[in-house]
Length: 314
Ligand code: GLY
Image (cartoon, rainbow, N blue to C red; front, side):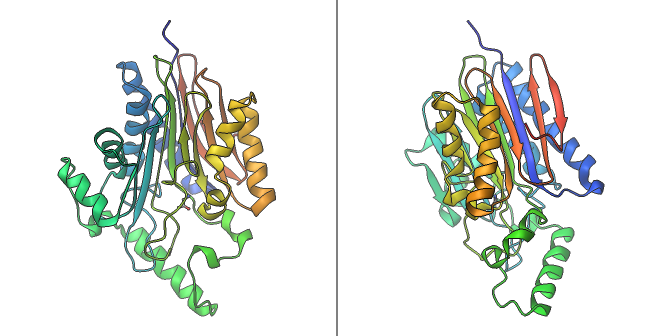
């Protein structure tokens, strides 16, 4: 018997200012609509999460694709991962500088390569060899982010911080920084789940720094036998806790995704003073949406529901 599809997306968890609320809500709604169209056409959960992520990578509101945070050298460096819960195949790219939609390359790795990851120039070469057009890094940089980086570096210099990348920042400030990493989880009519996460990483990051988003089990995971998960937030604590897999394992042990999502955020906060959010979905269509930041942008589509929000904590 066909399963009723479900799709959940997120567009970052932080103290999203009032002036940016509408843009975030519009962005996650558009992403959910694109993913839902794929599911309605009979597409797979993988198709749905890929299409949803592409919309958010193309939307300059988010820290993914064009408009992402700049690294210390003033460049956009992108990470993305996509995973199929029915086969456990995954595809990831890290530190790519010439791809508008890193999730498209990640999907190609999943489908056309025996490997799971390609990074930097090797990932770009793989993408080009598989029909994905390369862009210039300048095409991904927008004036808002140039100004943001300048202001950040000037402030860090005035404060006397010699090492200003993400790891050097004191933890309590992290929920105030933008974490607009994007993610999606989906269940298709065949009962398969998938997840994807895409990011430009942290502001002023050291060149070559890889975040949690593209790391399997950290920022993204999917297994039909447990759950599909995508996280957002300050990457280093999420990586150290392998948080997406931590959450999926608890669903496999019988806990409800709604409860596990909240527990994952409590664990992140209590264990490492980490900040962020998570979306979680199992193969029965049960889902959880949680964050330990003031706000997280999310949207949900199912045969019964069409919702979006920026403040929900369950
Ligand atoms: N969560 C995004 C990053 O830290 O790279």
